Every structure is written in structure tokens, then in C-alpha cells.
Amino acid sequence: MTWSSGCVTALLALACLSDSTLRPPGGFFYAAAARACGPADGPAVSIYLATVPVESLAPTAPYIRIAVWQPLDHLAGGSWLIAAGDTSAAAWYYTAPNDFEVATGGHVMVKVVQPDTTIEGSVDVTFPGAGRITGGFRTVWIASAPLCG
Image (cartoon, rainbow, N blue to C red; front, side, top):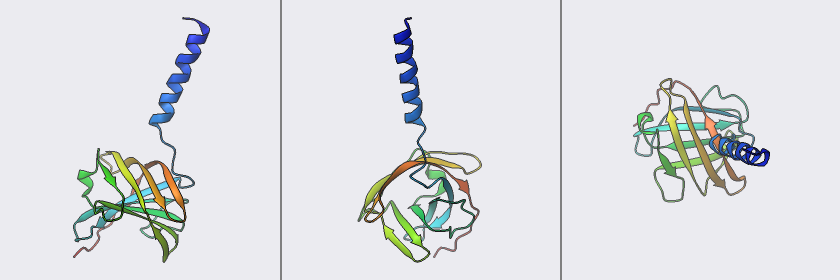
């Protein structure tokens, strides 16, 4: 193997590594997830992406909340569209506790749900004001017991 072919091999390996390890979405280095209620009071999971560690279901703004209307045990390996009129997932960008905008499009994918309820996945979502936010996440689980219905 020549020096140049060794360099090409090393560069390809680095490129593949960088593709499989998504960076956190711009500025949102922290992620958490919790049980939630779906639109018809069915089981759901909320994923929070934040600029500071998430310690409650009302994180410090700015943050993004992504709701997937599926139970936790149905998330692994799934992908959900975030779009007007679609009822499988939704996303909100909060700039203050009561000031938010709704995503106009995108998707969320869950690669794996670990036995300790850590969720790993990626998001690609667009907001009217905040623009496109894309990247990977690895959540911590926040225990909650929402009262649905």
C-alpha cells in the first residue's frame, strides 16, 4: 500500500465516522425525554433539546420540544414526519415559557432506546423564525406520570 492510498483510506474512514456520529443541533447540546400525552390522550414521548441541562419538563428557554405520539417501547428504529396536517409528531421552538413557534416541516428519527430509557436519534426540523435545526441527540430520561384523559 502506498502512502497516498493509505491517506485516502484514512480520510474515507474519518468521513464515515463523522457521518455516523451526528453533532447536536446548533447550540442545543443537552437532551432529555419523558412520557407525555398524545392528541387523543394516548401514550406519547416528548424529547427536549436545550442549551442548558434539562432538569424538569419546563426547561429554561430557548429549547425545542418534539412530541412523538407513540409509546416509548415503539420508538426504536422509527422515523416520524413533522408536517402540517400530519398527526404522528410535532415540534415547538420555545423562546420563553409562553412564547413559541410551531415547526413547519421536518422529521425525527430514533435509532435506539437503551434499557435505561436513554434515547438516541436525530432531528431535522424547520421553524418559521428559527429556521432549520438539524443534528443528533442522546437523551436522559425524566421520570414523569402525566395524567392523560
